[in-house]
View 1 (cartoon, rainbow, N blue to C red):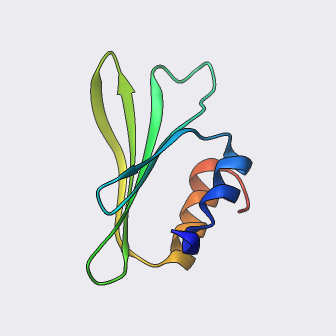
View 2: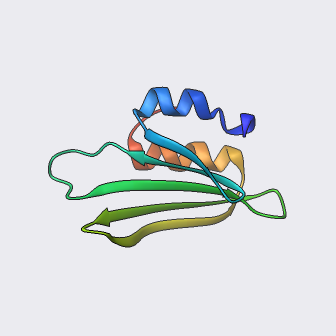
Length: 89
């Protein structure tokens, strides 16, 4: 996961509870007060060396998938994170 610059990502976004999941990584992203629950990001490596990125809202124990991007490359991932989080990574 060095390819994802995970340590840098966690530092820049304030991501909490980074954890290893099957074939990938997951973390909780801080949200503003207007956002109820919390935002979960998971990044999973596909067998063809592309990634699946999922943004989910977790509220009262329920998980709702907000956005999902499949078959993306690292370069595209940076663009998506910049758009979603408003950060230039």
